[in-house]
Amino acid sequence: MPSKGERTQRRIILAALELFSERGFIATSVRDIAARAELTHAGLLHHFASKDDLLVRILAFREEQDAINARRFSDYGIDRLFAWIIDVVQANEADSSRVMAFVRLSAEATDPGHPAYAYFSRRYDRILTALDDAFAAHFAVLPPPHPIASRDAAIGIVALMDGLQLQWLIRPGSVDMTGMVRRHLCALGVSVPDLDDAVLHPTPSPDRRSSP
Amino acid sequence: MPSKGERTQRRIILAALELFSERGFIATSVRDIAARAELTHAGLLHHFASKDDLLVRILAFREEQDAINARRFSDYGIDRLFAWIIDVVQANEADSSRVMAFVRLSAEATDPGHPAYAYFSRRYDRILTALDDAFAAHFAVLPPPHPIASRDAAIGIVALMDGLQLQWLIRPGSVDMTGMVRRHLCALGVSVPDLDDAVLHPTPSPDRRSSP
DNA sequence: GTCTATAGAAAGATAGAC
DNA sequence: GTCTATCTTTCTATAGAC
Image 1 (cartoon, protein in one colour):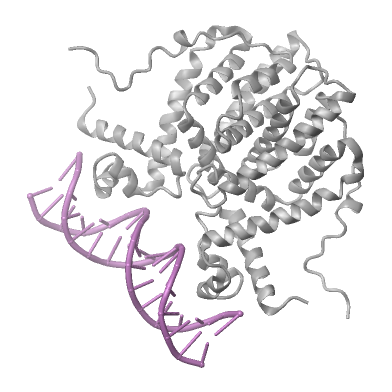
Image 2 (image 1 turned 30 degrees about the vertical axis):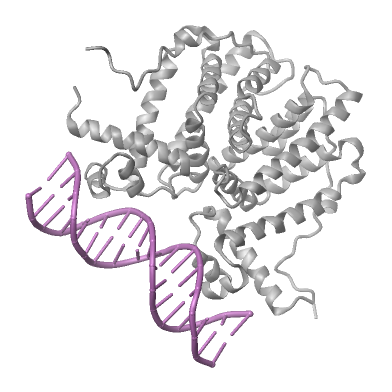
């Protein structure tokens, strides 16, 4: 059972995630976050040394979750990363706040002075390396219809996903992100089986309590 | 010959463009812009009613320039839009401030309350419609290697360009944007001839004066 | 057209009571 | 662990002199 302090910190993190998604980091004040977490800004700063510290620790939190998530696809064999990608896109399409958080924060974080710069830099490194390997392994078995370096295939699919998110936010409902990514992979000779959402995302029920 | 007021406004617009590129709209203050344009913030607000007004008028300014630019490709025939795209990517690759401005502002502008929301919404509408038509015309002559709707081809190429910009900013020098876009078009059956930069970008000399 | 001065709001952060 | 109170800075915008 988590202590009172841990529960408060979790409340703060969730409130901050919501607000950073809606408005970005720069435009969100510590007071706003504290209000949504139902305490004063001074109370919040007892748990997090500064606004920057709060963001950095949130990103570390999200990084852990992502790592846990990615592991669920380990038995999809050589194409497990592609299955994971489709799953991420589907999850994004079902939760715009995830997309907003990513679009807003990654754009702000292109400034090396931004507290999230290191996080996004590392993140791209990791994802591109992993996808590069995945494409290389796949192409070794089934060469691509058009000649393309595995590294470029990795850069391309990541860019496509990021760019689709921007369009999807600015012109809601105008883009079928999952379909676009699926077709793009298909054009590279990668086909991903339909995933069973009921298995992969078991009943999200953050607001339900189990009966007494 | 422009009046003194017009010259001052132009100085302000250029300073604002630089700063919005470097830090985004939200994180830039009217005082910062005024300082770079070498006047006080009160002096600046004599020319522009508010910070929002300044951004809106800057974007209108940029829209005009873009329209003028695009017209130069009118004699490239059916593929003129693809030639223009390659030119835009090349220009971006040579001037990171253009890319920063776009990435920062478009991400902020996904909020419907942002003063640039209408601009980006219109911009995507216009570009996607034009590219949709261009792909449709091209595919009518030369069907794509993989079956793909012209609308999806348009969405895809725009998403790729936007996403590449993000990677290019976060991991400088790691991405060959022009090459990536060229290969992507190529995979759709579109090949763009090498453009002669000397013709298309005649001696950029904003700081040179003609001899007396 | 540009300035100084200032209003009025909001930001991040700290001190210290409880 | 959370609060009130406050410091200090910075912001957008306005008023009015020159």
